[in-house]
Length: 506
Ligand SMILES: NC(=O)c1ccc[n+]([C@@H]2O[C@H](COP(=O)([O-])OP(=O)(O)OC[C@H]3O[C@@H](n4cnc5c(N)ncnc54)[C@H](O)[C@@H]3O)[C@@H](O)[C@H]2O)c1
Ligand SMILES: [Zn+2]
Image (cartoon, rainbow, N blue to C red; front, top):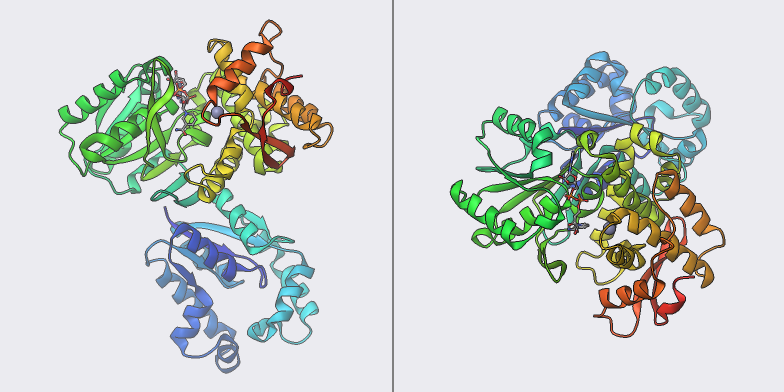
């Protein structure tokens, strides 16, 4: 990782947004103007008046140079620092610059509140600000990452920034970062004696690259490859992992890197949770499903012949590193299946994500990074609010009550995502019948899912009775009623306890 610079016209909220962003990411925060004032022992307006703008700009350049030598953090820049080419070069080589933008009216509203601190804008604020924006229009337009802050709260802007940056810090069952970035950033993460756990398919495409990345940072990583697929998500395979850890000489300080889909992540995480009473692990998900779902939230485990995920532990990794480029080698059917979870996340709390998915597969594949970043952010927000699944985390079950049952009755002929797509539509129709959801919601959802190549109808030959029975068995712990996560509108779901399961399917 590197520094995050917030830049843009006066009044865009660089300081307040930057401070909150830094707090969320557990990073240090520097407000460059405050540093300059502290160094000079006087306020910026005083500096301007006594020494002139050139002298102030000199101090600003110096402060910038010094600040980038500090530990990586969030740095709020004054609105004109990067006009100097040398300063821009310093910032560009030390991190990412995000330009905050806003309409003139928004800026005026905010600046009117504290205009005495803005020496370049005293006098008629509107005129001066308009002139300043016009003068700097080309300059500001030249920054590639921009975020408009109009009509949004500080929290919303910070959240949006985190999505754009692909940076999150979870404080749920332990502290860890979830980062959407290039796999080569693995080298920046502290670890010891790493061992890569992967499956045969993923190994073919990606293992060597990860080995090379770790080699380049001075490690001599071991590689442990297990057979691919759910049928190997067993105690036998976990046992092979434990044995492999012993053979490789792992100790309590070693780090397991799970490179693979949900199957590898669940098993490697579980093996790490129990090996020597728990060693560090890092998740590097390689399927869409594991990027947006399985790798986030700290659930690990394996299957028994009696059922899936019956044995497991909450044991979050120390880092989740999501590199959407790894999806290039993922078979299409797996990719499409993963899109059901992405659409689900859109329906739960990100309408924009839902509409983007509606643009179809070509658009999605050409804009994968944005899709993955948004979907990851939805899951993170829910986990943060409810790490142990005591309440609203159940929202993630949208489509899964019917979906799991359909998956089971199909004897796993339907992929998980396919069954979930069918489940989402069935549950949306049910929500409409209950008048929990607005009319037309299920059609909109079905249209979006089928445009992505997902099925949306329960197969004709599948018995309704069997599905209902399967729902009951799946959730037998909630004797009597079953808790559904039902869509209310795109971007909002509600938890509803249902007794009369017969009424769920039309
Ligand atoms: N822990 C959780 O919170 C959680 C949540 C949801 C699902 N899960 C679990 O996740 C599992 C499903 O995960 P999945 O869908 O990722 O399945 P998976 O791990 O079996 O991967 C699917 C297939 O794709 C292959 N593959 C993976 N990445 C590839 C790549 N980049 N290129 C080429 N091939 C690749 C795999 O070898 C496998 O054959 C289930 O066991 C489920 O229980 C866990
Ligand atoms: Zn799922």
